[in-house]
Image (tube, rainbow, N blue to C red):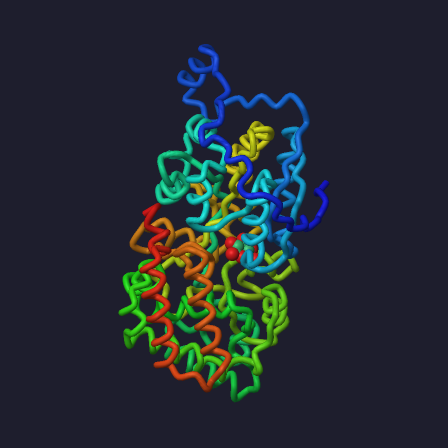
Length: 456
Ligand code: BGC
């Protein structure tokens, strides 16, 4: 049922060949269909003519067991619409590599029809006129009423809907192994002091408290939760969205850095370079009592037969219960002359169907982007995630590690320094702060800052 899994070779042959029109031609609606839609107040009233079978090349990085399963659901629903989903996979957690391939392909005039994206980058593609405008589908499907308000404005950066949102991941998730914690009479920690006490007890018993990989994005995932716990949402914003040099010099930032390094004593050392499914496997098999990871790990463990609540549980990472550190998965459709427009619109339309939202997010570990989702398919982790996200802007914090907070250059530069500090204990906290302050000064000067502010 699924398409081929091939990594398209990267060849940069020519500069930006065909910047497509930002306003692709719209299918004309007849007076009758307009009238019918108005009378019925009907969602999905926009009929997309799809007479010929079509194939969409979809660039993404979803390769784990649960990610495969989630994609399979989309593939099957799309097939029912006469459209074949052809995988073009760049396998690496958190999209490391996918963006590079995407940029190269766009520059070579060979953009894929669809690409998985997280974060404000899609508005840059839209500004260049490269994305298919989804306004028709969004208007007729009443997306502004259907979607959570923050998502509805997020996907409409300059007045036009340019991506189809799939689901919302919660990054500040602490997974705990139910059996291990029960065995030692321990509760999941709610703050970092409690964590230290719990970790010390586990250490005595010879159990590593925390599963962790040395992959840069996985260190950044842990680190951003420490920053949030240390300084709350406003400080997090100053650091990762505004990149205010003074914030990197703040004692709270120094604390978060020290905490990151101190946590190594509770990890199996040396910390190994493992992909996230390997770390999750290690945690699921009892190799560590806890793990900080986005809730895609929940989807993965469920796919392996480990049930939420009985085999493992999840709570907010210590000190972040009031926040939802979010990572939103979206699909962007590249216009490329409009040849696959109808098929792209079909895909956009089906991503927002309540059934797809419920089934896809259940498998993926995320929560639906809808205002009134089907809660029957949500487990305790999803319900908790939903409850916090639905509180609105005061609870929502864009994940820096997962590209929601800033541009790629800033992200990579900051993650590079944080990882160096984590791995190399000869580097002092002050030195790292000093380096990051200089980086922040340069980044804000060259104007890569505030990418996030284009949406919020
Ligand atoms: C994406 C998820 C994906 C995870 C692991 C995150 O950045 O949003 O969809 O499952 O990375 O690759």
